[in-house]
Length: 392
Image (cartoon, rainbow, N blue to C red):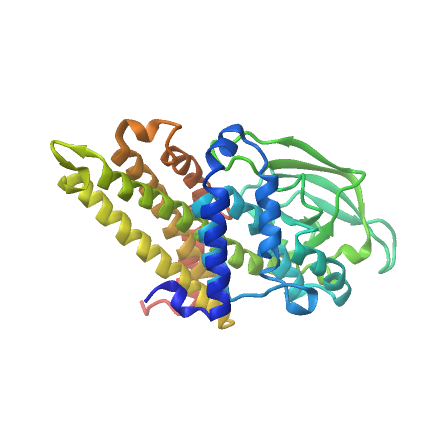
């Protein structure tokens, strides 16, 4: 059964429409844009027209909400064309889901209608220069600007590796509103902030891959946020809110890995049919055939893991372990497939005239992004025990 067969007719249309967009508008220009590290303005506008930025927004706010399975397949199609495009909507979707699940009515009314159209694009600001994956070790602090519930916050600190941070109008900022709280996570909150005085994009980070879309450092120095910027209106809930959001984020990264892996596999399969050596197409040589067989098998397994986690999420179940497994396996799979695609292409695989070198540069991001794979293994191990383990 095709993954599309599990979707409703309307959702199948969403996926196939994005697939056509990728084939007709993305693939013809991606090599030039990627090598020039050019922001894909026209392609982002096309994604807005398709409604991609509204896939997590309820209809009452102008969105076109889809199942997590559909969202995964849309992400895969975008990443198949250019992983950066899937990254451009990843954090945006997580913020939309945070607003839907935890936002106050006023926060949802303010942000979701414009997020649905892509007029407002959103991103998350979690990682800090000295913190990496240890989100509880935050140094970005938001202190009350005065007494009383109506007092706003003064924010000081820094964030790094923040995608779309120059162009996003809304930033979901993870920070400490009670630096002395015990346990540490109980003093963490999410503030919904906008660009303004006291917030500086310090620099764009140079990257191996993931070109076109910016990843930046942010500096907060005396930045003032109003009291109603607090997600959900209650302090100390941010760590749990963001952990729930990261379930979606890790599924999205897994789907990006599927797209990159699929693109590398399809290019390798096509090349192996066209290229001849010793009088036969190279796929007939056992070593190349074995590569292709392993690529197809592992890609299929990664997709099943990811779709299983998506279905569990749609059923309303906790999926931190399932999303971690999908992200871990799919990203490692994409990296292996990208390398094997270079092997199959031989010298051409090292040339910028072929796309496989781009897949090889893009694939490592999914291994380290949205929580490193070492962190995913920790999450999986803890959940194995927390969910019952085995009797000693």
